Image (cartoon, rainbow, N blue to C red; front, side):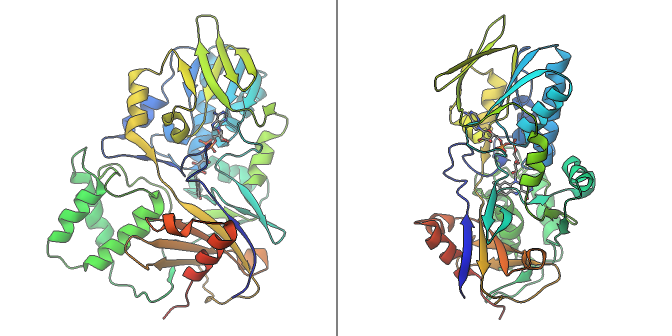
Length: 407
Ligand SMILES: Cc1cc2nc3c(=O)[nH]c(=O)nc-3n(C[C@H](O)[C@H](O)[C@H](O)COP(=O)(O)OP(=O)(O)OC[C@H]3O[C@@H](n4cnc5c(N)ncnc54)[C@H](O)[C@@H]3O)c2cc1C
């Protein structure tokens, strides 16, 4: 197995992300998402994926929240508006306001656009190290944009993955229904781990291994968070489903379209936002900007870490929301091989469990769309600490070794 090219994500230790997407912890509820996105007076509003009550953790949810925040600012007749962050939410807010003739500046900490959509070039083709799919495809505003732009979109069937390695599928019929019933009945304050432990102590029609593997695939892989922390009642949020499509060439094709003509200042981390009666002062490294209103779209993890000082401090509901929500960690790798050594499968999706419990990886086969043997891997669970150590070349080699032909 010879690796010709690779790209590796590092969301876990990225200071401008601090994880992959927001999640509801055991003390939280969806109301925390709503509270976080509630305007703070007339001049400050937090937007971004974490504020969406039903589409959190997804690009189209972020985009929708950016549009909502832009409408809020426009309705208050603010002339000069600062948007913090040039991810999907920030670009949506800035695009909407610019199209309504407002004076908008976007301050972005990184030297690139897109935030947690992040392009990588491997073997001359564009892939995604962040968001990959247009989820909830039929009801996704970015999917409609991608269609209008004529982008090439490839569906993935997540519900029929090929199991690779020494794995065999047990019967999972009914597990999801039973799990959802138990999670819905759990009190706020209980973690998914609590519900799982109680369930596994009872005799039942499924083996412990089959239940755990279902949870690894559907919850660990989809959250990247410890089950003991994740809210039983609200932590298993909607997302991946039938008909999701990925963009050949990557999300950057959407990002570049949305950012065209906007005033985006790259490499400008915002450190302080001070609101007074007459306006807002936004400050960064050697930068002080006076505006009428600010829309903050930085990731939840960045806010929770206190990377931006707010004056006056954030109100109680917002601070509580930051303490009850959190970020998971899902990492990705793109691997280009000299030749295919894994089986062909029309669904183009593979899953690997092991080598220990809670270790799960999923793989998208991009070979047909790309024209060369290429896999995009997603990793979550406790093994990330050992897999994602050392150089990117070492991580890529370890990730590749996980792919084993089916037994
Ligand atoms: C590995 C991975 C896979 C994913 N897969 C999917 C998927 O398949 N489909 C899907 O819909 N979603 C997916 N997501 C989630 C999706 O990427 C995010 O929900 C969405 O992009 C978030 O957009 P946002 O604008 O809210 O935040 P971001 O994209 O994070 O944008 C915030 C911006 O703020 C900037 N910033 C941070 N701090 C500062 C500061 N102090 N000053 C100035 N700027 C700052 C950041 O650099 C960033 O550009 C995935 C995410 C990851 C990490």
